[in-house]
Length: 332
Image (cartoon, rainbow, N blue to C red; front, side, top):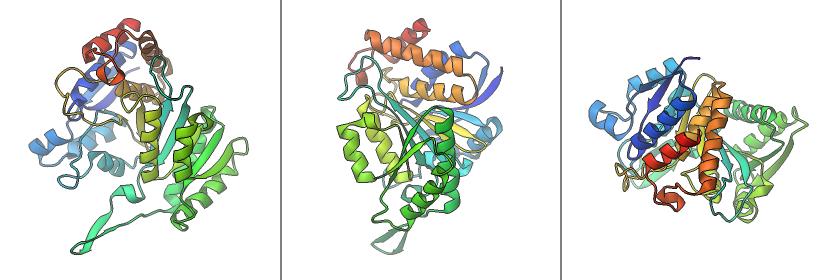
C-alpha cells in the first residue's frame, strides 16, 4: 500500500537519526512518501515560532507523523514543541513499551513492560502563572472525561495485545481529589475487564519496586507527570533512552518519536544511535497495519545487538550511525 507520512527531523542529532530510520523503513515498507517539515529551533529562527502552522497541517492531512528529538529551553525561551503537538492534535495517550534487548549489560534481564501516560492534563501540561511577583502557581487539572478515554484506551490495548496485569500508579493518599478521580474512573473501567488483573500502587512504591524487581510489572497506567518520570526510569533498566520507542496517540492522529534528547555535543558527528527512533517507527508501522515490516525491523535490531560487533558509543561501542544503519540493512 501507499502511505503519506509526516517527517519531523528535529534538532541536534534529530536529522541524523531520522535519515537512518527512513533508509531502514523504506527497505521493509517501500510504499511510504515522506513529507518533511521543520519544527524546533530551526523553525523558530526561520518562521518565528517553533511549531509552525504548516507542521500541524501536514500531520492533520497525513494522520501519522514520525518525529526526531526537539530541544526545549529550560526556564526561558519557547514552550515545548512536544507538548504543543500533543495539545493541538489531542494526542491523549503516551505509549512507552520497555523491554530487555540482547547483548546489553543491565542489572535486570527479562524486563517486558508497558507504560501508559495520560498526555494532556496534570502538572506536566504546564499551566502556570505568576499572580504576584515572586509567587508561581502551577495548576494540576484533571477531568473525568480525559481519564475515562485514556484508561479505556489502555485497557483495550491490553486486551488486544495479550497483556494481563495492570498497575494503576497514583498518589491518592495525598492528592485525594485529583488522583481519587483517576482511581474511581479506572475502577469502573476495570470492572468491564474481569479477565485483566488490576492493582493499585503508590508512585513512590512503584519506583522502589522497579529498581528492585521490574519483572513483576506488566502494564503501568498513570498521569502525565508520573508517567514521564516512570517511563524514563524504566528505560534506564534496559539500556537507556537510546533503545526505547515512544508513541503519542489520539482518536484521529498519532505521532511516533524517540524520547531521548537532541545530544548537541555529538550532533553532526555521525555518532548518534538511531535505534530508539527506529523502534518508534516500528510502532508506527504496527499502528498502520504493517506488522510484518515492524517485526522485521525489531528482529534485525535484536540480531545486530546480539552479535555485538556494531554498536554506537552510548551502547559501549565505537561504531558510527552509518555503520549501525548498514549493519541493520545487511541483517534485513
